[in-house]
Length: 451
Image (cartoon, rainbow, N blue to C red; front, side, top):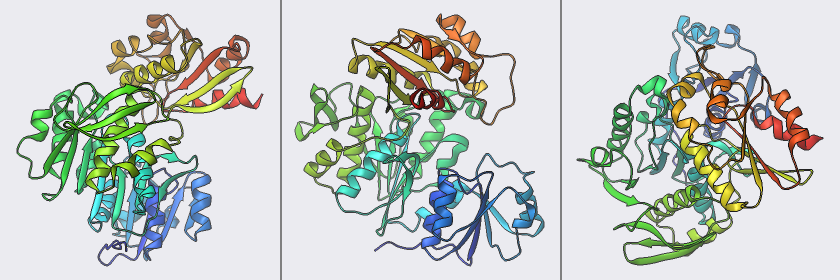
């Protein structure tokens, strides 16, 4: 049976931004644990409708009147500014407020088998793989993930001591977590608006590793930059994996896509047939295999679960066909992710013209990694760009998608609508269109399919 979450004297919890992809899951988990849960969001969504359907009081719009003295705890995300009306009202009433990651850290303490999966890339997909494996094994985990699994849901509320969590590094959120199993998949320069340097990123992941429980284990990519610093003087065990060379621990052999052997040292663990394309998915699957074995799941059960994986929404997601042209959508927004996605597409469709419609995500990332972006589209036959998705940032006139298009030799469009109109006349029956980015570029493919 699951150990219920304990938060001291807290009885009523209010979530600002309750419809968010992580917040909605936490809200339902706590509601099922007997807490009175309320919250607000800026608009209705599938998530808010679901929360309402299970009896959670969801208010649409931010209003200081929503914050009443009977609330014991207010939870918000890093995107919610101090001047937010509901945060201001909570402070005026003396109500405790905490960021989402701190709440997650408090919740994880009540789970014997807390699994946190971190990395610059692949953590959503790997968390989904571990979720599928543990569900196949009958462990009935509670899950909180930054993407939609099985097409519609980003969390599960289990009835066991297992909690599977995607651990985000932005703003050092994952420093609130003290897992039994922690995984580090990879590291790249990213979120440089927060970290400022690669050394700071390495130190952040090193602290995440140091926070693993002494009885637990760190599962880490053996080829990762900063490996020695991250693994030095840890109290927990260290298990390594890699897909690029033979390892003393987990590695892959006899690769004939979609199948490969999972090896542990010189011992064959299982032959895996993975329906997800690309070397990066094999890398994620290997990490998931290592995590699952630490949870005492049999190798044949792991292999069976991996063979039945359907993937995560917006992660190399097949959307449909437009006049014979295949449309795929992917969340890739970092140069490393772009390269990996396009390489997978080239391997899967060697005879198709690949057209990549890319929407850069944030001005700072586009500026800080500009040179890396210009080298990321090598496997695309044609590249198209739409304006930068600003996310949390103010407009920056010093950087633009047009500048990136000029450097790459691609086409630049002023809007998603302009790009969609161009694609209607451009796409041919043997093309492959990938809409790519962490913003709303996926709408373009959906508009084409509706036509």
